[in-house]
Image 1 (spheres, rainbow, N blue to C red):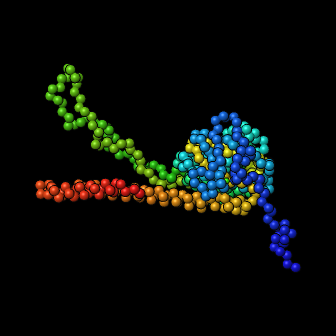
Image 2: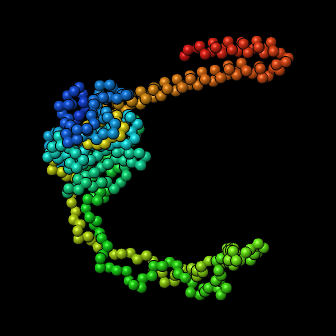
Length: 421
Ligand SMILES: [Ca+2]
């Protein structure tokens, strides 16, 4: 008997489990988000997040997200969810960021906190598990942070992942797998991946230089040496400066008043500088000495680098100089495929609409610029017509003709000025 494939897979225990969604926030219920998101209180001047779809969008309602609304402020807002551990599970953190303000300096990242966080007291030193997302400050900093807290220390990725710096929505995804591997995606395309152990300095190095090994004293690693057969020529040494042989004592020199006359000093043309022997290849050269390595006694592998006891809060704790960034479509799940689909259904749809709106805006801007340019050029041309006859036609021969042409051109120009677009 042939069994349907899903049933067969299920019996074999291979069926894909339903995705577990730990946290999802799209801000689709008006002011409802204010019940779910909590402001931190220690600084009374934290910037305000407002719900907005911004200056341009695909769908005015669906594209509403949390927007930073005040310049030069710290922001500290967070939302709580049922605590979960990612042990033995894939962890996917995903959200969209839209820097529609043409950002100069500001964070666009999230922090995932353990259950113990007091949300009303979230501050820069609050211990988090993972920090992930874009960060921009001037042309020098345009990167995606991936920071893991490992045994109490924040460990930064060793690779440089460049973030997007345009004004459109972009989808940022971090995937952490139980095999201690990771993947970073921007706009559902992989931009970095690898092993946690290789790309972060979580653990001490596997190998170290053998402290008992020393370079032998007779190890010669000089590639070049002085030629022992070369010697300084006997006439080499000359003074660098000499009295000017062409200088003459001035006739009015008064030795009683000025002291004994001395000629000025000039550079000696025969001066050759410091003598250095010729360089030859070192016949004793043994190559670069490689320090022998041994297994590092401090190193012990950790198959659970990726794992955290619990995640329970997603926080936006960041600084922005120029506000206007919109965060939306937060998702924390255990399912990479589901996250990719969710990204395509949210960012994927918005992206196309945003590009369309932006293109239309640029076309309108181009049209109005072109119209202005045409008006400026035609106005200048008509004004030129007024004065051209006066230049070309000698005034003595045809003052009445020149006057008539100038008057006609003047009238034409006035009409041109009155034309409205
Ligand atoms: Ca939304």
